[in-house]
Image (cartoon, rainbow, N blue to C red; front, side):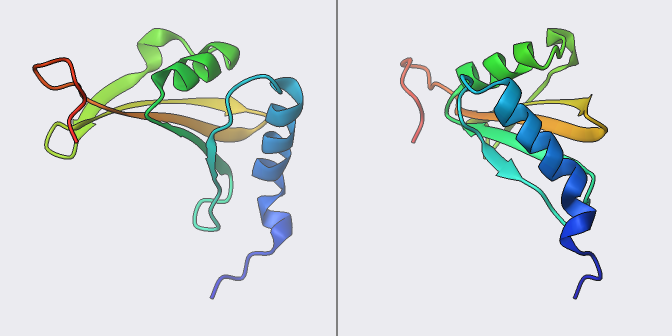
Length: 107
């Protein structure tokens, strides 16, 4: 059992509130906060690199700061970037299926 309280999550919760206030027109993302790493916030998009890119630009993350890798035996591409936002480490992640040789996404 953790000894943390909701007060310990105040920083990422405040950052999330600022993101919603400052960027209301951007795509909704999955949000992850954890008591394991209480000063981090993760925003993730699935099957939509467009949402990742919109957030990357809005947060001022340089394209060369984005890492790209594949997982799931090469079936899923993962973009990842991080930035300090309001004193919180904000990690932006995008997942998308890798197209197969025919131009269609792999199942």
